Image (cartoon, rainbow, N blue to C red; front, side, top):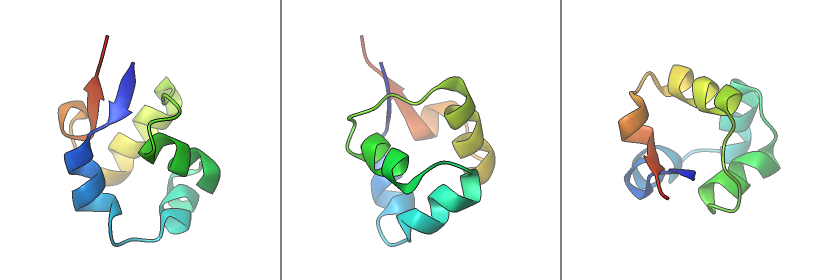
Length: 66
């Protein structure tokens, strides 16, 4: 399973408009909230969009769990 890292959430998503981030990367606001709450795993497209938007490597944004 792939999830957003807690450190990433605290650093980049704490004090921003989730709606604006979702709009900027081309996903629904509800999808962003599900990702933040770890209730949904991102697909390859969403992973790519988030990495491109923040210009960060995979390891800084996501964690993988078995």
